[in-house]
Image (cartoon, rainbow, N blue to C red; front, side, top):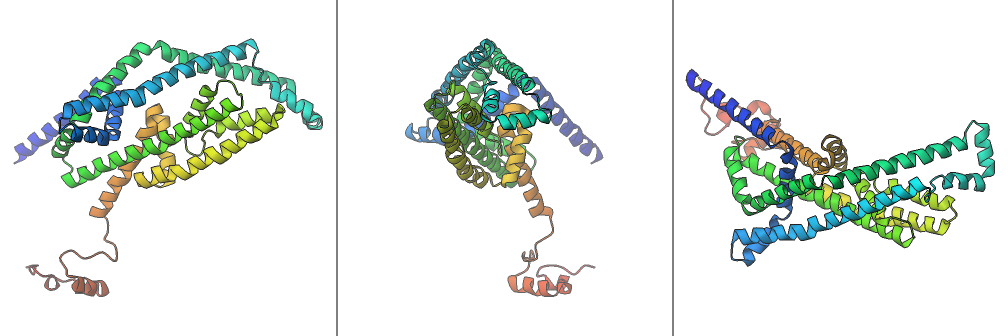
Length: 384
């Protein structure tokens, strides 16, 4: 028996070691695999719909699902990336050439509020230095954004390779998803009910995060970009994408983009445009976020708002862009694991039924715990 126990421990150690080695071997392809899993979960209902229409043929249904992903997700994102890169480079060139003067709001404040400027100068505020800092900071930021976007474009080969891996793996995850799930449930040593519950939670949090995060951010970015375009603000696609990106972060949102734009319009004398932009940002975009995010994320994910905020920010800081989905998933699994642990090993609630007792006996035991003796429990033998 001792030798058999040693064999089991050695085999378990080998399983862990080989699994870690396999994960290390995948290396930079772990993120494409992760996104393939996310897309497979999101488009599983569509695959099932195609499969029913095709008489249960899985391979054609998976191919049609993959084609839908290419048309509905990949192609728009690639086109949007090209447009954003072009506009970002254009903004940098206009800032560098002086066509865009970001010190104009400071000069407008000096013209409109001379008494305030005089008082500020008496307190030691140097507006010339402020203008220099604004100009240098704006140039540095625009240059950094443009260089990063250009660098991303120069890495098109790597991006195409990772995208191809994602789509290739996605085909098999979509086609064989149920079989893979059943295999993992059979292989993992956690107990089938626990594993099914964890997989269900993973799918629910994934769908809720994508719906409540990316869909809402896309809506907000579109509203903001259209508002910028109608108000005549240059590079509306770039600013719309930036508002969509910042809206991914709860409690921050696209206000980090449209508020400075509204202030610039106001101090520049375009107060009507500033009021319209403020109304769209605070009224429309804010309403979309406050109304839809708790419904789509909190309800479907089964997590409180503060947990969604912390997990989103933590995931973003730890895993980068992918952490916007990874963070809530990890938080959802964390809550589920502790719920199962509490249900199975935690102390029983006062109103919980005592196992093995009929309701009248359970009530009697609750009134007088001393009555819980071997004779009081049917089928229990008196200890010797």
